[in-house]
Image 1 (cartoon, rainbow, N blue to C red):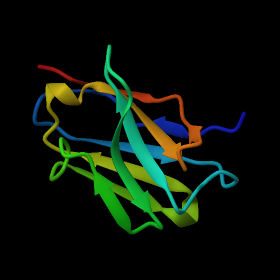
Image 2: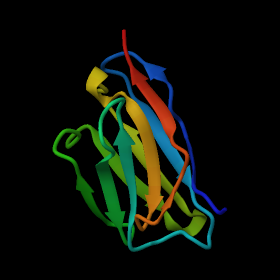
Image 3: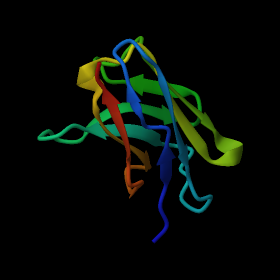
Length: 112
């Protein structure tokens, strides 16, 4: 089954930064909608950030001003730059193409 592949998750201290990457197969890369979601233990999966046509971006209120989503459409990549990370950002982060295709996720843990 064709899947997206996330990378970049790690253990980081509060206030630290991480950059997540998502590589999509060309066949499922959706320039009209790519996004990052996250799921914390015991919680539902929630949207973090989305990017439409490589330029229009939206963010969850909880990450506005700290996270930045970007894409490299020519290489079928999507990124999530995360700054000033906090313990409540701890979750498995998933990349999605069009809300139909998903990766297996990458773990982000924020802890001192």
